[in-house]
Image (cartoon, rainbow, N blue to C red; front, side):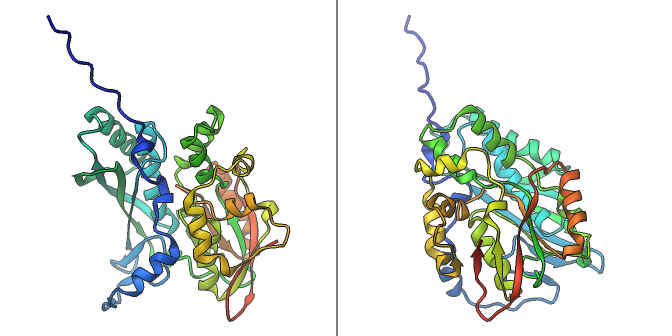
Length: 355
C-alpha cells in the first residue's frame, strides 16, 4: 500500500510579502505625486473630513449629533504567526476611527490570499485573529471581500460614529500646544529584525503587545476641549505624522528626542542594521523639512522615520489640559504615554525640529 503524501510545509508568512505591515505604504512623496494627478471633485457640505489634510479617516455628517467615520487599512504580513498577523492588522485599521475621536460600530474584512500556497486553516487563523480584535473593540465583522492574491493581504474597512463637536483632525494643533505620544516607537525596527532572525522572544512579545493594543483613549481624549488635534503614528513614522500636524498648524513642531519613548532594545537593533526600506523612503520624502542637530545619531534618525504598524496616538493639547490627557491615557493602560514636544510659533514654512 502506498503511504499517503505528506503536504509540504507552508512558507513563513513574511517570506511571501515584499514588505510587511505599514512598511508597505507608498512613500509620502510618491503618494503626493500620485494624488496631484487626480481630478478634483465636488465636495459635499456634509463631508467634514476628506483627503485635503491626509487625515486618518473620512468623516461625513449624518445629523447635528452624529457623523460617520469611515476608513480602510490593509497590508501584507509583518509576523509569521497567522493569528497575530490578523490581530495586528485589525487593531491597526480600527485605530483610525479612534484617532478621529470616534467610536467603532462595525467592520468589513478585506482578504487577499495565495490559496494555492496557504492552507485554509492558516487563512482561517488570520481571519479569526482579526475577528477577536473586533470583538474586543465591541464591533462585528459584518461582511467583506476576498480575492486570490499573489501575496497575503488582510485588513478592514472600519466604520464608527463621532459627535461633530468632538471630531479631532490632524490639522488643528495650535501654537503653544504640547504633544503627547501614546505608544513607544520601534515596531518597524523589530519587524526588520524578525525577518533576519534577530528578534528574541522577549522582543517579539513586546512587539505583539504594542501592535495589538487598541487606541481606546481616542474618544475620551476627543471630548476634552483642550485637545486640539489628534492622529495616530503609522507608516510615515513619527516625523511624517508630526509634519502633517505642523503643516496644519502653520507652525514648527519641536520634539524633545530624549523624551520620546522607545521599545526596549530597538536602538541596539537599529545600530545593528535592522532598518526597513520604508524608513529610508520616508526620509527621502520629507527629510528636507526636518532640522536635526549635528550630533543626532543615525539610529535615532532611523527610529524617527521608522514605519509604525498600529502605532500610538499623537495628541496636541493646551498645556492646562495635559494632566487630564495623561490621566486618560494611563486609565486606559498606556503607561508609556508622555510629553514629547510642543508646537512652536507660527511661520511661513513649518518644519519639524529635533532637540
